[in-house]
Length: 424
Image (cartoon, rainbow, N blue to C red; front, side, top):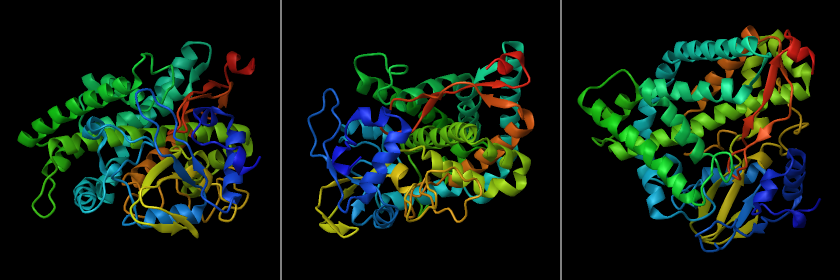
């Protein structure tokens, strides 16, 4: 495969087998330039000017460290330029530039200090154990099988986010449904109408309304949750508006939920492909976890890319780029850059050092919730090894059809101690 045969603007590329995708990424990294692609077609949108792919680790790092030259405010999560109404719901930290980004991130950081995150550990452990116990009971009550995504890796991070934010239990199914639509891409399992943009905006409006309502209540009656901390946090005397709190919550539902969900699922799938990795981690949980969590995120690269827009004529990795150029920072490619990672295609749970970019590269947009995500992944695998030591994958992953999220919708698993599992 050569770089000239790759088309990142083709939705079918992102649905192709992973092996083909990573072969294409290797070809792009080997190309000396920054290849340009046509933007994907989307009903109701005019054809855009195209984008350039940034696939080498050093180049992704360069762009991420210089927001003065490569901005996020013109759109970070969409190749297409979204309509203004989308910014009302999705204009969170991830799609902002300084100085507004700096102020809002400082307020948000007050709610995500290491001390507060550490205090969430008991909640994370309790939720993980409850989710695993429920999945195990479901398996034993039936034929021994269940869906790892639906029963374990999807509910766990979303439950943590809802508890952390103080979302009432009666509204959590609503959060889950809206989040799935926002993350669906063009997957027909979640997008069933002929107006996907309308569905996307409606889901954003639903989450926004829920959180705006909660923020108003916490303004009057603060609680011991992150919503209260966000509503009452200040920087230079300034607070977040209720809409900004709502946009931040949508970001958590998307980035916080999806990264953790898919890191867990991909991790189980990767260890299925290399059972020695499962044996290594489950046999020495305390010793392997510190490196394993980051390796799972690197290998999975749950978010395919983020967009930046060139502010002024400059260069990336020695290649000239012009003001207005759209750049896609392709994490699935940079995280397998052989100049940085030895045996980059392999899942190596003892890999160290591991300067992966699965939480973004260094810079002002590095994932604010990375510490919590690492904790969630570590706790989930610890509890998975303890509560389901006989877990086995019994089918192929059903992948999410999305150009943005490297998602797995379903992964059939079973308990090896059951007759159903032994029959596979």
